[in-house]
Length: 266
Image 1 (tube, helix red, strand yellow):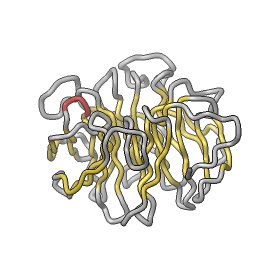
Image 2 (spheres, rainbow, N blue to C red):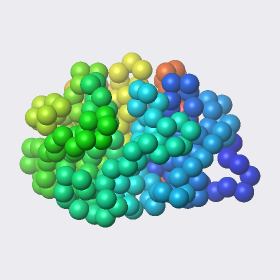
Image 3 (spheres, rainbow, N blue to C red):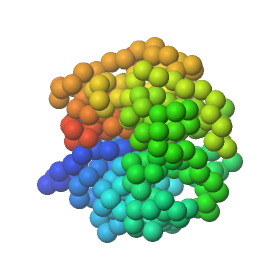
Image 4 (cartoon, one colour):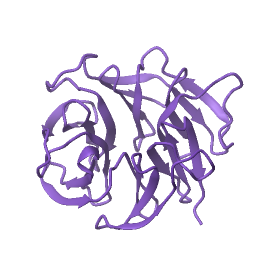
């Protein structure tokens, strides 16, 4: 009951969520009005995206408050300001493996020097690096099970040390790289669908296949896991991506459940 969705609206599969510095909640879902902004109490504020977005997947908000999304249906990455104005579009609209192309990109992350990393995801099994203005810099990775290879890089995030963490979903691991693509560590034992850091630096992982959420230490070990398959409060139906607010409350977007749950830190 947290979200006050306008009367007559129906949420589709909820694929991603993030929060801006004012505490506003941005939900990305596969239905009409694909990007919806709510205030910190769940009150509806604004929506947009019907004219551009085909199949929502990932959504992240950068330090300037701009909203970046990945569209696996159009093979594109879009950047909007907080009013919904389109500021940047990456990709050609068709699947491809060129420097200016994507094949179902899944998620976005931001480096400490303004770099933008995209997990290019279902089709290309690689990570692409851009400048803050959207200029292509480099890419790394290929399909496979070996070190530095991917089988569906599904989520990506940069930690406080500037390391790039890639949720290598179908290889059941997180691979940790430097910002030039050098592999540093590998954490195994779970299928990462979504990655989010809490204010204390704790990493939370949505594991859609296991229908739960994990809390990891700095070495990738599981400290806590909770949830199970279901539609009751605190249960999950394909938890996909997630976000954490400054108070430590956790927001989980569910593809199967077609909902957003807010869990308060105890």
